[in-house]
Image 1 (cartoon, one colour):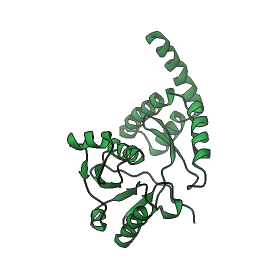
Image 2: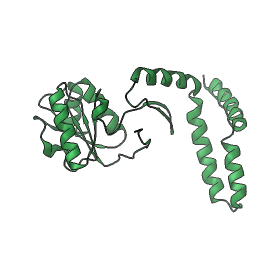
Image 3: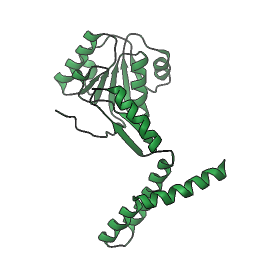
Image 4: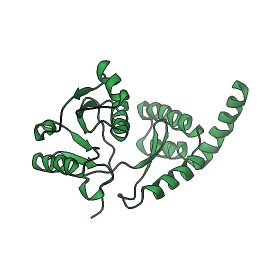
Length: 203
């Protein structure tokens, strides 16, 4: 059974991270960047989690995990160094219908973290469904070379033009033609030439 690819909006949603070591901190950081309300559950924590808790960026429950910790959660990440603890988290999530990811344990994951190439609003996600994170990482590096920093500006540029076209009094079929041209290779090459010249002037 293959996974269903999806991009989630996490703003304002409660996301629980069980564990507070280096890996858990990285997972919590990724969730915070995307606007989630992060709750960390662990008796001890690395400095980064302690600092974020003190500043109110996340909530830290300084104790061992309890099944009640997943109540009301949108998703949960289990990132402890104990297989038994991670399994308990997964079982609690399954019992309550909460999405769960157990780090480095594909068999106990409802969702996977893909390797991602980010160029502003452009995101290219690569997943092997846990079969080979190393392969996903290699493909990410290859795509980072293929899709350079100019793509961030290009996507923002065509997004702005798209909004203008959609609000214009133009027949629907004509709008579709214009939007297809905006996203075409010719439009990109023209934009990149201008972007390169502008970048050189700034440097």
